[in-house]
Length: 77
Image 1 (cartoon, rainbow, N blue to C red):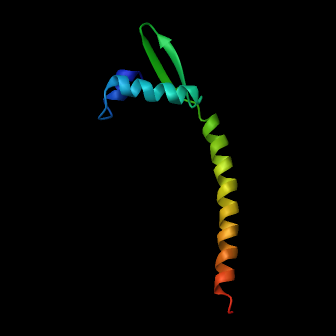
Image 2 (tube, rainbow, N blue to C red; image 1 turned 45 degrees about the horizontal axis):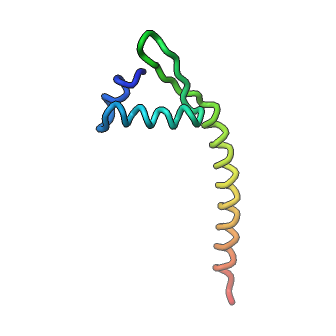
Image 3 (cartoon, rainbow, N blue to C red; image 1 turned 90 degrees about the horizontal axis):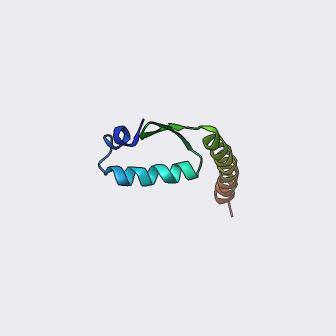
C-alpha cells in the first residue's frame, strides 16, 4: 500500500502516517519501492522473527523465575 491508502485506515493524517512508516523503515520492519510518484510499503517479517525469538527467551526465563517464587511462597515456614 502507499501512504494515502494506509492513512485511510487511521484517524491521523498522511504526514503522521509517513513519520510512523519512516520509523518502521529505519527499524527495517518495512521495505518500500517507488513506482512513479508513489512509494509503496510492505512488511519484511525477518526482524519480527528476531524479536519474537528474543521475547520467547525472556518469557521462558520469567516463567521459571515466577514458578520458583511461587514454590518458595507456598512453602511452609
